[in-house]
Length: 158
Ligand SMILES: [Zn+2]
Image 1 (cartoon, rainbow, N blue to C red):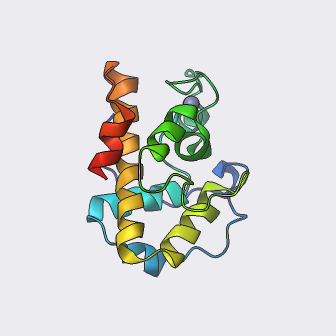
Image 2: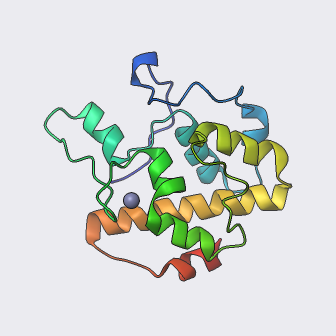
Image 3: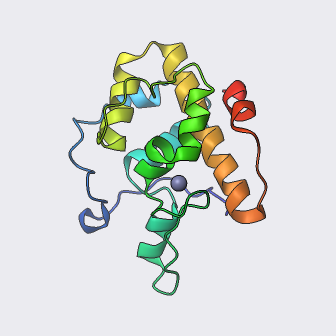
């Protein structure tokens, strides 16, 4: 699926459970993250919970109810995609940030990402952002084409 439209403000009732618990998102710092603009837009879409995971797509498309992660079959929320899926965990473990940058079990994606961009040094924040981007693109290859790269290869690109 093409991901070209700019981020938009979600309606309050579209926000996934867990969103809104985040500390105040520091948009200024997010926009200064050391990564290409397309990845910054991607980070904004994560923060607004409008990335088209299968759970978010199912909310918008009444006739499409498949919410499953293309790797493990659990519901594919943004939180699952990047922080909890076993496939994603293997990729994290192949990267420099094996502990997912101090991720605490159950922490919301928004809170965790805000924590990354406000506390990590610029190179680390940029590297983690790139890793999330690569993970998302690999997921899209898998979802759309059935292609699959080795997790270690993805981690080394970040
Ligand atoms: Zn999964």
